[in-house]
Length: 111
Image (tube, rainbow, N blue to C red; front, side, top):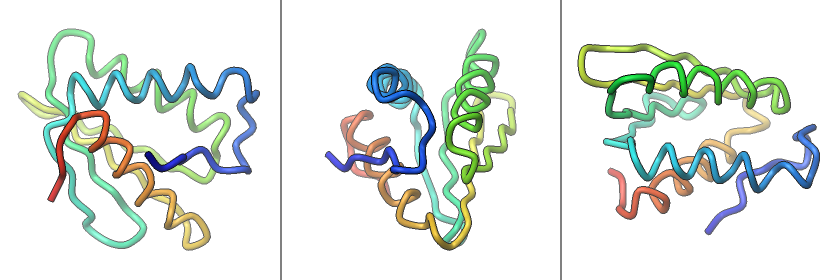
């Protein structure tokens, strides 16, 4: 499995596995699909439900605090939540790694 935690992450090393576990749990329970609208943007489609939007917003806010090169946009819809993740050109490979991590946690290949 690809390690998608970049060296520039400021989250203490001892806390990184816990954050990865939070993302893995989200992807395992909620990932419905993904797309790559452009090379510097990844869209993850998550199934909705009670409290899911708040959980996603909390998680990405904390992630933005330690990995400032990520820009997260949470767009709730009726039955799903679109999570757009954008980076600059220097971090494009991070989107590939994040997508691979999401697919592995969800237990399937994504188109």
